[in-house]
Length: 394
Image 1 (cartoon, rainbow, N blue to C red):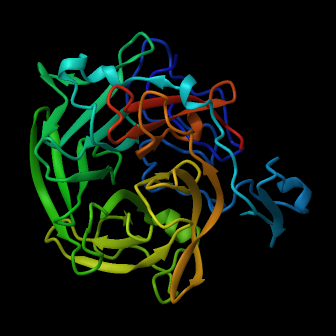
Image 2 (cartoon, rainbow, N blue to C red; image 1 turned 135 degrees about the vertical axis):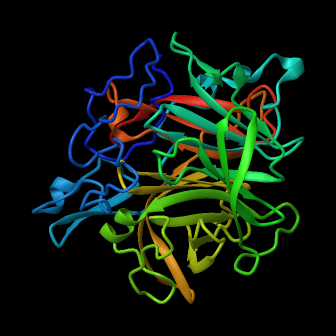
């Protein structure tokens, strides 16, 4: 089993088995895990976008070269670029949940395991091979997970302290911005509707650096339905894919973060996008964007493919794959959906309340497969799964 470095959902043909995630769980941050010019995940991965990031396959002369092999999508060649559009919902592309690897027990024994409930979000950093997890209640907690050197997983430790922090309010989502700032995490809290930046470089002690109040721009949480998904998209990807604001003007960050924060909401499934200033808490609201479903629980942006993964929970349990380009829809805008996949279903002994999704980059492909992680809110002993059989080519 590969270490954490192989978590991913993939949608690029640039899979390469040449990237090494060896059996001794090497987590060094040496830069270059680059397999080609389009799948750069090295130290500048937070700003590097390939020029065809908004397409699945790349340049084309005819539509025949764009075929992704899926009956649930339509593939065409438009202006010498392959464009994929959904025509129906695709099946779950990996192994069934019964065959997925349950790693909930990395947190502790059954009588003392805080991942058994409310595990609500996940994000992966390819530069240091760490998976970050958050739970939203009882109290809220964040963990950092690494490979254990034998092909398994373990909660990280440093200077004798466990990589575990607590008391973040109703923390539903988390993300990284600059991947080189590998212990600076951004946490989304439901109810108070803030994004907060934390320095987690001292294990066990969280230091709040900045906070942004989103209440003027997103719906108030009602009945437990509030903001849950959080991810950061670097400017280079926004520019490459023609991202526009609410009125259709090209937009990249203006306040110094080098990208925009995307917030997914359970009420209506909308994405709310923000330009943030780390120095003074300034918020610029960029716009509201429709998704494919009426609930959004998790977000993850794949910097190796330029695709946004949107996890829809709340009775949907589907995975939407979208570009950053958008079209007018119902008075706002809707991101361009590439495809929608069914979820894996519920475990016979657990729950299907999936909320968090994390992926590795395309450079992590080995033998045609990579991995994805899904977290389950209220899954008890079945709350954190690794899916080892995600195909590198969908």
